[in-house]
Length: 77
Image (cartoon, rainbow, N blue to C red; front, side):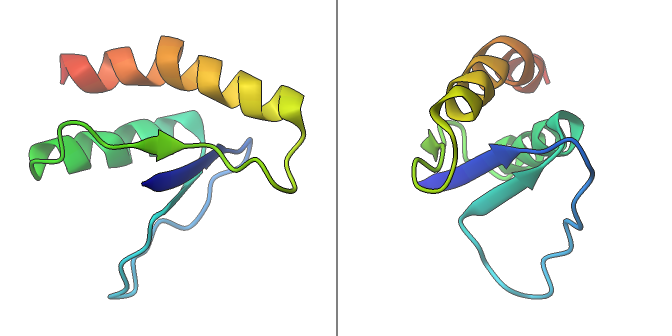
């Protein structure tokens, strides 16, 4: 399971030799990271928004953006 949050500002995506199940960044950053996952063989990741400490409206908006904007770009790659 990969926890994700879409932000308005870019986030440092450097892995620093650590594996994480967090995916945070702008829509473009998340799209690129998911394309890399797909190229590495992760074709069906379980993406899950954080429900604690995040307003429900933001969670629903992030899910809609993931489904309508991000995933079509990832699947087309």
